[in-house]
Length: 566
Image (cartoon, rainbow, N blue to C red; front, side, top):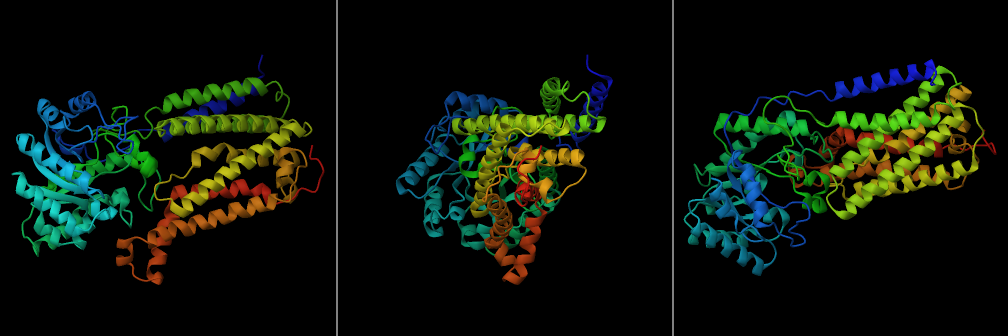
C-alpha cells in the first residue's frame, strides 16, 4: 500500500498540474464576433495530405466537390490560383454549390506552362461567365522574380483581350508601389497584405490598423495613375502555428483575432477582401515549413481551426493531453514509489515533479509534432524523436532516483546518458545553424528538447538536495551522471552551443536588415541595426531556444575532478 507521504505528493502535484492546465487553457477573447452571413471570399487550394503540385499529384474531382460543399455556407466566393492541375472541374462544382469564383492562372518561368495556364483561364472564363466573375493573371511572380514586369504585362493584355470579366494581377502590396505602371494595366488592383510576413512584422494587435494604412497608401498611389480604380485585398490572413517573427506570433487565438478584426475593418470601410485561406495546405510545409502549412480556417482534416464567434481556445484538446500525461506520470510513479518511500518529503516531491514535467513534455512533443507532420519522412522523424525523448526521460528518472536515494553512480547508465545528450546536442547544433543560415521558414525546435533541458535542471536540483551546494564540480556533467567519463571535447561542446546562440542572434538580425522594405524604411546600418535587434530580441520563441542552448551547455563548461561521484 502506498504511504501517506506518497499519496500526499500525488494529490498535490495532480492538483497543481490540473489547475495550471485549466487556467492556461481557458477560452480567450478573440475580438468582436463576425457578423452573421457569409464571408466575401476564401482562397481555395483543394490539396489534401498526399497531394502536392510540387510532385504533380493533383486533387481529385470528388475532393473539390466535398470541399466546396463544406464552404458553400461559409463564403460567397472562392479564389483559385491555377486553371489546370486537377482544378478544371472547379467552375462546374462551384456552380453546383452556389459559389462564385475569382479564377487565377499560375505563371512561372516556363513559357509553355504559362501559355497553357493562360489558355485554360480564358477558356474557363468564357465558358462559365455566371460563375467566374473576375480573373487574376499570375500570383506573386514579381515577388518571386519569375519574370520581369513587361513580360507579365504581356500576359495581362492577352487575357484582357480574350475575356469579358475584369482582369487583375496579384502580388504583395509593395510590388504595385514598385511598378506603378501595373495599375494602368489591370481592371482592379489586387494586393496581398500579410502583416506576419512584412519585412517589419506587425503584431496581431496592430494588424487591423496596418490593413487600413496600406489600403490608403495604395489608393493614394493609384489616384495619381488611375483614379478610382477598385482595390481587392487578394490575400490577408494569419498563421495558426509556426515560428514567431518579431512581434508577429502565430497561434489559433491570434489567427481568430486577426480574421475577426480584418472583417470588422473591411465592413467599416467597404473593403473588398479575400481571406487566405480555406484549408491548411500540407504540401506547403516542404517550402515554407510549419508556418506555411497553417493559414487555413479549416485544418487539413477539414475540421474548423477556430470559431468565428465566441471565445477561442488555443489548445481545444488540452484535457486529453492532461489525461495522457497523467497516465504516463502515474506509470513512472508506480515504478519508483517503493524505492523513494523512505526519502524525505522534499526529495519525493522533487522526483514526482520531475516525472510530471517529463510526461507533459513528452505528450506535448508527440501531439504537436504529429499535428505538424505531413509526409512519411516527417512522421518517421516524429516517431524517432518521441522514442528518443522517451528513452532519455527514462534514463534521467533512473539517475534522479539514484541521486535522491544516494545510490552509487552506475557506469552503464552514465554512458547511456552521455551518449544520449551528445546526440541531442548534435541535433540542437544542426537545428541552430540551420536557423542561423536560412531560418525564415524553420520553426524553433523548443518542444523537441524540453526533456533534455529539464533533465539538466532536474539533475542539478537533485544534486543540490543531496549535497546542499553547487559549484564547478557538482555542476559538471560527470557529477550529474554519476561517473567520470570526462572528455577533452566537453568544453568544445559548450563552445559550439555558445557560438550557435550568438550566431542565431546575428542571423535573425541580418534577415531583417536584408529586407527590401526594411532597407527603404531604415537606410544605413546605424539606423537599421537597433530596429532589427529589437525585433530579434522580442522574439519569445528565439529567446526560449537560446535558454535551451544555454541549459544544455551548462554542465559542459565545468570539469569534474573526482573519478566517481556516487
